[in-house]
Length: 449
Image (cartoon, rainbow, N blue to C red; front, side, top):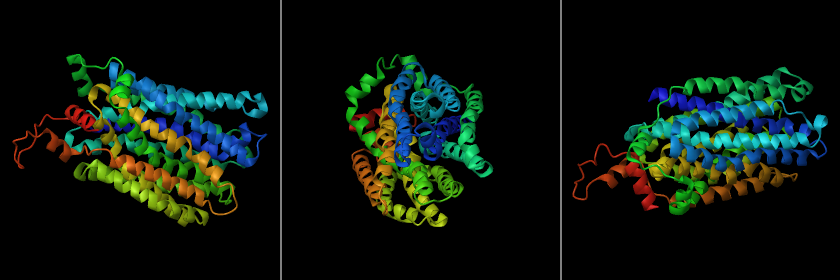
């Protein structure tokens, strides 16, 4: 399990590195380089719009790679998605600027960002199912949290490189070529990830589906027809997590450097501290999910998110590095209280034959609402001279939406699964069948929803 979990973590770290390095570049340099005819605000908005294209592509990537995962196995998804994202990211580092090729430059950015999104849309489902479908029931939350540690690690890698380049290069050097280096480095990381995943075994759940002839012929159609409500609910649930993460890591970075005149290295360092705390807390919160259930943690994280939005904006507005860091840490801890357990929660909600498609598409639908729109909407709402309270209200509204969606989902933790698989005549001391695992859980939960 440890080898499988580390392979999943490494892969998600590399793929999210690719995704995050674009977000940081969009906040710092892409506006002036690729949209020089726009005003500073309009250029930032345009750069964030190209950033959002990746989120729009992610559900499509989930559908494509989910079909592969449910029809041909989880393992091919892990390899193909990593290769696609890595190649697209390296290519971004070679795109000429607007000054060289005109309007073709932002068009190329949009195309490559779309390809990044396609690859990442497939990565999460494959990586999470690799661990969740191998893991023992009582520790499924813990093992399935390893892929969820990958995004913080990828973010720290991406921004650590950006921070180092910002600290050692002049502004002119960084704008001329320095911002491209992290994109080029993605090639070496992708090769390392492919090497780590080369010997990963197929999951027992998929092997059982193959042997019994129960694989879905059209997974996406089956998900839409039989589990459409569940799909929309899971997308709505996760919207606030995406909104919080990208409000902190992308919009706040642009706002702090452009509007509050916080040095770029200081703003990046504050955000990196908060992301490191989030990554360290992920497995600890996942253990609580195994003990007390997935749903209670998700509800608590949503409620904390709603309550923290206005303090977050107030602390950011001070431009004090310590207070900014406190605001960021609070927001990301609220977010990871939910996301630490979704690696186990979402697969348990879907039956095995359509699990790769259902869990991944639901996960990435949340990114369209929360991830793609948040930097754009927040930048527009913060356009005035006063504190950006509109941003806090917007984020709190998304939090209330997600809270309502989580309230409509059932519990799937170990205790709930034992209760559902226990024979009707069984007494309180009797456990359900030892072999009752994700297959029974997914079917029961899908039927309940």
